[in-house]
Length: 345
Image (cartoon, rainbow, N blue to C red; front, side, top):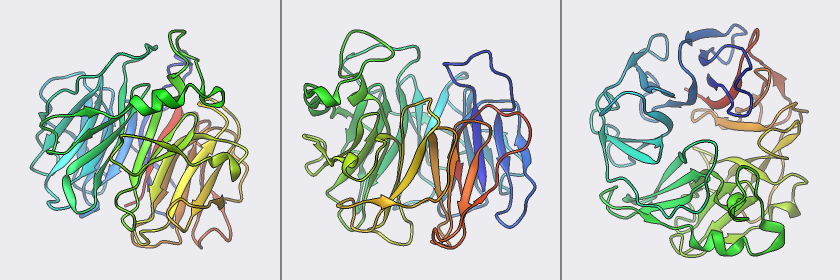
């Protein structure tokens, strides 16, 4: 298992370890394997667990030995912040990386060298204390050139030609913000649509390939028409907390999804909810009390009973090895900054 840690813009003075930690699921000791960069995302290549990627505040760091050592990958320039990764479903050597400011990069050699794709042209709808970020990408099953991206404080993107051109598919998210319960303005005062544009994760159920699920500040939303319109699935019917930070589909069950819901970006409460019918209904899955916003869910592709969650503060990590029957704490040692990402290899 791998954990990515970084500083939080709201607490720049806070001290603690950053980077990537690693440990075996059956062991108790964590190794600090990358310790000199903020790591906003850690990613295990789905076709080869030897390849581990860390998206940092200064580019991509790549491991070919299961995260024991890392080398810096070749991006077009230095100083690029990386927040997400995606591997093409039809070619394991083709990968995509999402950056901040908004930019998407492509590799054809399993992440060693990267080139920039067409930079998306976005309508500037709101400002903030940081540049918008590409937080997550997903390919439409069976159509590898059709990719959707979730962007923090910028909504959602779509390409149908593998990234040669991009289309902003956020207009209907802004329209939905006219509803009072979907209005939010925290980092700026220009628009109440900020919360609906504050997207963190996006996924597609392979069993329902035309349905796209987007987790954002105001809840979880679904599109059945390629992002032209979005529907509030009213996650509040199932959960007292609705701040969506992560959403993932089980690698072994195309109808099972998990979503991380908390009170806010910097809160002390949250839970994991599971759907076994591709998002139609949800129920509480975890049996733990977290002390921070749940930032990330990690699912073991080789064992569907193993699910792990990371909360923002104090290196707090919990996991189940038996499908949610029991949970154990496996938190990081010492003083650390904020957890941003978990991954299983």
